[in-house]
Image (cartoon, rainbow, N blue to C red):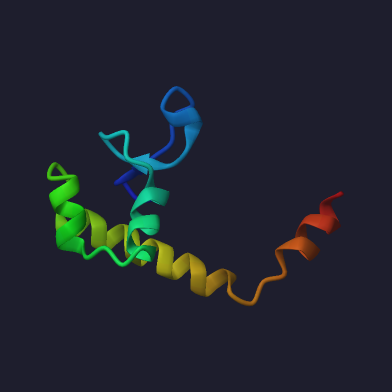
Length: 80
């Protein structure tokens, strides 16, 4: 994970968060899904900055593109 994301079992049960905060990365994706703009997110979380949000969005975009055609259920069933 990039330097802006961390996971600590003692913070939010180990969910990936924005480093130095208790803001889950998934929250940023959720807000974007609810049509929040970057400016609106920054108003809600002024201690973040635009570069952090854009980086997180790019990470999500890359992950989505890499997994778009993957049958995750098939992969999981191979491991059982």
